[in-house]
Image (tube, rainbow, N blue to C red; front, side):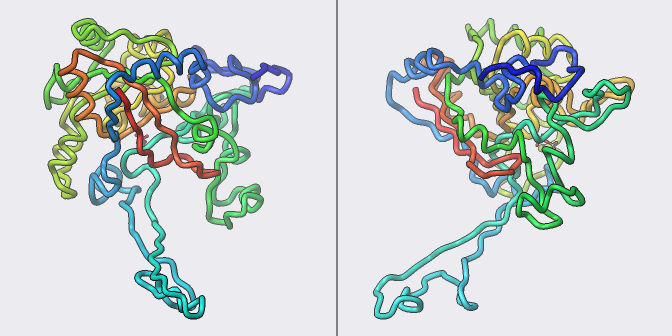
Length: 351
Ligand code: UVW
C-alpha cells in the first residue's frame, strides 16, 4: 500500500505509534508484515500434517460473568409465515418435495468466546487534529462518529442498520478476512512455567520464559500466549466461578512500559491468548489519567496489532512441548462480517 500522506487523517500521531507507516488509509497495521516470504516460512513449519482446532465451544465460558455486557449464543430456527424451519417438509414451499429442512440463526455477542478484536474495538481520547482538544480516535486517525458509528450518529442510516445499530465503516473485523490472517504462530507457554497462580508477567519474566524454552520471535509472527485460563474455563463446564475467572492464571502485565516496548520492537503481527483480555483487566495501580487496558491501547490504537482472546491453546501447547517445538502454521481469518468490531474465530494450527 502506498503512503499518500497528503490524505492522512491526523496532524499529530501518538508517540511510539505506527500511524502512517503502512499508508494513510491502512487498516491492517502490523499484519502488513506477513509478507509472502514470511508466509512461506510459516508453511515450512508443517512437517507432520497434524491440525489443531484452537477454538473453545462458543457457548463457553457460560453466563455473563466475564463481562456483563456479553451474552452466549441463542439459536433459533428461521421462519416463514409463522412456520419455524426445524424438521420442516420442504413441501411447505415446493409442492410434492420430499426434502426435510433445518435452518437456523443466532444471536450472540461477537466477543463472547474465542474471538478477534479489530482496531475499531479500542480507541483513545487524543488530539490527533492538533487543535489542542482531545477527540475520540482509533488506529491511523480514524474517527469516532464518522468512521466508527453507533446510536445517535448521523451516518448510521447510510449503513442500513437502523437508528440503534452500530457499524465500523473503517477498521472493522472484515479487513482481517479480506486479507486473511495466516502466518507463523509462535507458542509462549506461560502456563508451563507459572501454573495456575495469577502472576503479572512483565518484560523480564517474559524474556526469561522465552529464553528457557528457546523461543525465538521474529517480525510478522503471530504470538500464541498459553496461560491455562481456557483449561480453567472448560473445567467449570459453563458454570463459571467469578473467583477463578478474575483471579487465576498468569496474565501479561500491560502496565510494564518495557513489555509494551518489546511488543513494538519485536515486530509481532498479532497477540492471541487463551484468556479474557490478554492483559490483566482492569489495570490497577497506575497513577493519573491512563488507559484501563494499556496493552489494548498499545496494540489496537497505536501499533495496529490485533488481539485474539479466549483461544483454546492447551492441546497445541502440550504437543509442541512434547515435540521440542514452538512454531506452527496458523490460519485464523475472522468472519467476513461487514461493519463488525469483533468476530468469533475458529483458528487452525498445523504442525
Ligand atoms: C473489553 O471490553 C474488556 O475488551 P476485551 O474483550 O478485548 O478484553
